[in-house]
Each structure stands twice: as C-alpha cells, then as structure tokens.
Image 1 (spheres, rainbow, N blue to C red):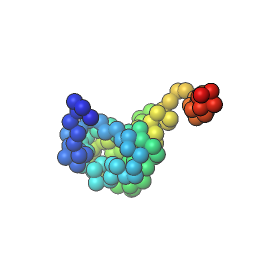
Image 2 (image 1 turned 30 degrees about the vertical axis):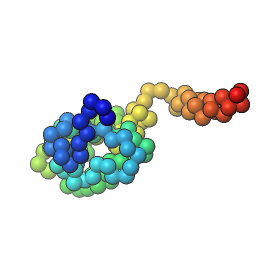
Image 3 (image 1 turned 180 degrees about the vertical axis):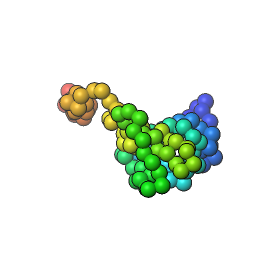
Image 4 (image 1 turned 60 degrees about the vertical axis):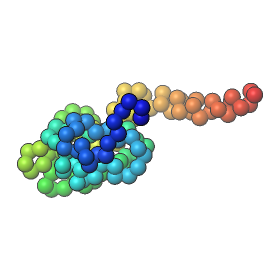
Length: 122
C-alpha cells in the first residue's frame, strides 16, 4: 500500500465517512462497529461474498430500516443516528450494476476460457 496509511477499523470507526469492504472474509464490519459509526456513514461491500458486513445483526426491533431508493437504505438507531447501507451488504458491483446479467455471464465465461485457449495455441 505504497503511499497509503493502513489503519485498523476500530481505530477510525468514529471518524470515517465511508467504509468499503473488499476482503472476502466474514463479519469484517460487526454490529459493535456499526453501533459506533458516526451518523451518516456509508457502508458497502465489494468483497467476495455477502457476509462481510453483519447485516443480519441489524434486523432487530430496535433498529428501523428506511428505504431511500433502490439499493440504498438508512438503518436508524433509537437515538436518531443513521447509517447508509448500500445493496443490503451484498456485492455492490453486482447488486447495483446496470449491466444485464447475460453480458456479465458472457464476460465471465470469456475470462474463464481465455487462459485455456491461450495454452492451446502455445
């Protein structure tokens, strides 16, 4: 990460405006961290699966979900704090893409077959 300051999420959770996960791990952002985020923090996932943000822990009677628009929700705490959750924690590039699924499947297939084709020609 040349030129970037790498920090632990718990050290900056109260100051950051945007959190983007991209680790492929489970519960990268926990309920405790979501509770400590500042009002208006935007949270989204670009990782490998939809388990990086502990969204299940936000589905409780104490928290209110308010749909702002397609794929954008406010999760509202009893004190009025709002966290902006994109795509309900699912993969942002797939959930919010305007590219048709057929095009995505052709792209993935082409990328998967390209190395095999290249090896056959060498």
